[in-house]
Image (cartoon, rainbow, N blue to C red; front, side):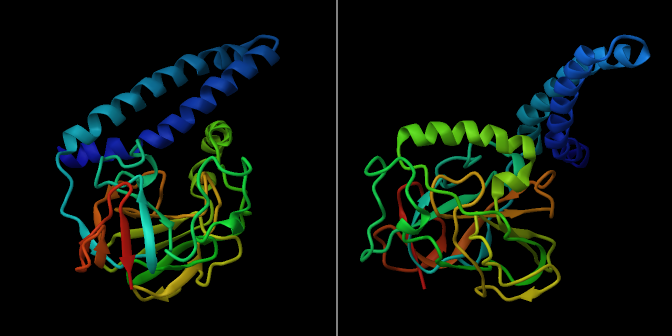
Length: 284
């Protein structure tokens, strides 16, 4: 039963994408075609798309509940070194980013906040700061796991940060357009690594031209694979990290994870875990 539910739950994102194409494509063709069988078929695409959207929402709403509790967190290597702030953390809520699509149910965002290089305060200065103004930009990003690279992209450009409320409103509108382009335009430059156990670690929003590994390369946990950037649906330079049960963000489900041997909050003793929202982690 769970296998069938999981299989249906996986197809909800492609179903949403196909439904959107059917609604807009059918509407446009209905306006352009003069009549006949093609026009008749085009007129039926929008209702079919709406039905697909409803089915997708039902799968999204009920699927996760029917699948039951998530497995125990998998311990992985922290993808960063130094002092980083946790944001959109699964410690506080799941799904951590508000949705389960793209395998990000248990993802976390990490923003670099070294004590000797303050991060620009939100709302101060220009609406769209240079990415280079942020201490995270260009910081080394490390593989969370040992395994084989199955996807590596670094061609998208780094954009400016969205550094006040008006710029964030622009980001939300921009994000809706990125969604139409699919996961690649949401994650920006990213690297996905497959483990021997069949798990997949994804690192996203990487700096343009910074990837040090390519598809088929073998990497070790902790190996530097790229640099932190500000690509895709990103408000400022940061590292987005997630663990998945499949290689494709179209169909993969997110898996819980914990960083090995990191200090969290004010506790100096290293342990396995993740920072909550507003908590710092320090990784060696």
